[in-house]
Length: 114
Length: 115
Image (cartoon, rainbow over all chains, first blue to last red; front, side):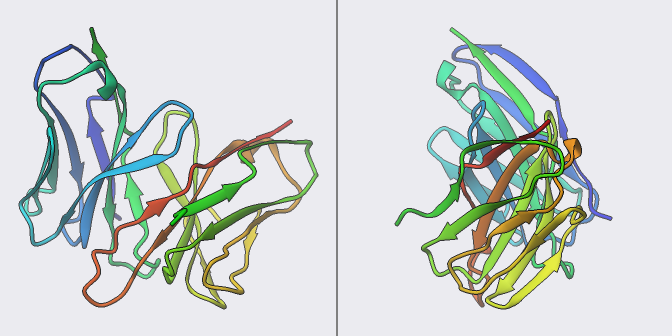
């Protein structure tokens, strides 16, 4: 059974720091992995999608990597800003018989202090 | 495109009442999903649909029902609401076709409290 774990559960950093959020999954048979941002009381905003054949994706200050064989992904945020404060969720797309459902980690709550 | 829209945004139900959460997408996606998110947790799949007229259960389907009469709409029905159904409900859609990235797009969510 696929399980997704995110470490740490919470992270507080001063503004300007580079930081890494971690995501691990137990079954390497995935279609893709998505990173989402969720602001308090809001919905999910898709940040990056990495296909199973890719090693990384970049969008602005964000870089996501994927190592399928070891079941790991990282989200790198460069030069963090207070506006980056949110919960970050990773999810894997499982090629099982449930319509390509996403299996989510519990999230990392990021706080960037001015 | 409005993307995925959900109504209502908030709702308070009494135990035993029923309601329908509405979800509409205007991207012509064939796959649609309902997830719930409990405090401090990731999302769990309730039901999904691979096309109009086809629905199936996810991980946590008990107490819910769905229908998919059109490509655009995927309502979620709660019968006999229970406190355990207090949660935030997210609808999502995905273009599941050959060559697509299978990216899922989420609605803004419905916050439901059952008291």
